[in-house]
Structure formats: structure tokens, C-alpha cells
Image 1 (cartoon, helix red, strand yellow):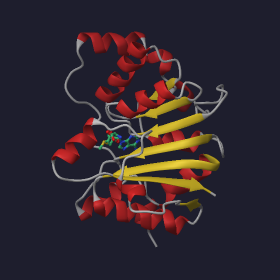
Image 2: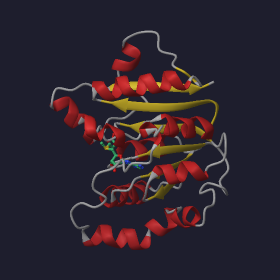
Image 3: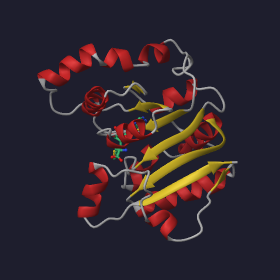
Image 4: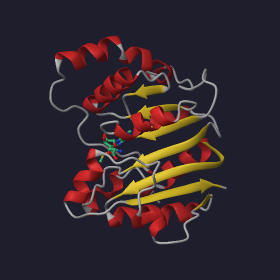
Length: 227
Ligand SMILES: C[S@@+](CC[C@H](N)C(=O)[O-])C[C@H]1O[C@@H](n2cnc3c(N)ncnc32)[C@H](O)[C@@H]1O
């Protein structure tokens, strides 16, 4: 039978917003190529192959607030941020330069292409924070979380590695919990309600989350551990 849940539907909306400012365009031309792992991906190679030390991956970093915070607070780690939206990538490039960070790598594109090229057990952490909710039932198939995606996340994590997921959409929370628990390879070491209702100290807020809070939705914060 056709397995809709495992099919590769487009998971993102716009890939471009308003035109970049001249300063952003210059950064994309001069600085982005130094951070970009796109050529390895185009060649079908592991985009993090030459790097040593702990590796983390943030999928759909949006305006890059969390990506930049984690890179700044974890200088021993290299974080690959993947985001198809040009304006978000430009923000990540600007922040990386302004903060003088040497531990960020970027790919403008679909994170599923990156996951497919990473070796087993390559990553200590994977972040999927407030992914596009696709709330209409006929669009649910576009949600990035599905069985095939979770299997890739599981495969690329090292045992004991963490998969962090957040959402302000309760239906997406249920959707993800159902699929993570059905996968069977992750522990969810939550003991109390506050474990998923209170934002951890090492999980900075973003404009997206602030907007959700202003609109009366609350955040849900999950850390699943690869067994
Ligand atoms: C709702 S925004 C949240 C942004 C950010 N994580 C935050 O919490 O503020 C979801 C982001 O995921 C990105 N996205 C969607 N599908 C993706 C994919 N397949 N690979 C990488 N990023 C993706 C979108 O472009 C969008 O910027």
C-alpha cells in the first residue's frame, strides 16, 4: 500500500522573502561560501566529513537565533544549520560574522538531503524546533516529522545522542509523540509536566516562539534520547 507518511513531500513554504539588503547580499557573496557545505552535498559526500569533535545539526533554523546561541555557548561543538529560506540563511551568515563564530556550517536547502549523506552515529544532537505546522488535515503530509525522517534522525545520532523537538501546536505535539514512541528507539526521560512545558535554560527563545506566546499558544519542549 502507498505509505503516505514516508513520502517526500515538500515540507517548507517560501524559500525567499523580501529582497536582501545590499549588505546582506554582500555577505551572501563573500562570507556564505566559507560556511556553506552545499558543494559536498551536491557531490553526494558527507558534508561534515573533515570535521573533528562533537557535531550537532539544526534543521529549519528560521532566523537563526537558536543556532547562533548554541554555537556561541558551545564553542567545542560544530553546528550545521540547514534552512531553505534565503533570508534566514542571510541572518545566520550575518550573526556568524558579527559574533566571530568559527563553529557554524550552513546549507541552504532541504535537511533530508543532508541526513541522507551523514554516516551512522555522526551527531550528538539534532534539533527540529517549531517546524512548519501544516495544520490543515490535507497538508499534514507535509510535516517534516514522519517515520522515514525519524529513522534517519535515529540513524545519524550516536547512542545517547539527543533529538530535540519543539512545537506550539498541540496536534503536532501529539503527532510527533505518537511517531517517536512508535519508532521504539528513543527514550523520553520526562518525569513531570514541567519537563515539556517549561523551556530549558539551554533552549533560547526565537521570534517564532515569542509570536506564538503573544497569540496565546504555549511552547512544548521535548528531548528524546537515542537508546
Ligand atoms: C516555523 S519555522 C521555525 C523556525 C525556527 N526553528 C524557530 O523555532 O524559530 C520552520 C522552519 O523550518 C524550515 N524548513 C521546513 N522544511 C525544511 C526542511 N525540509 N529542511 C530544512 N528546513 C526546513 C522552514 O523554511 C522554516 O524556516
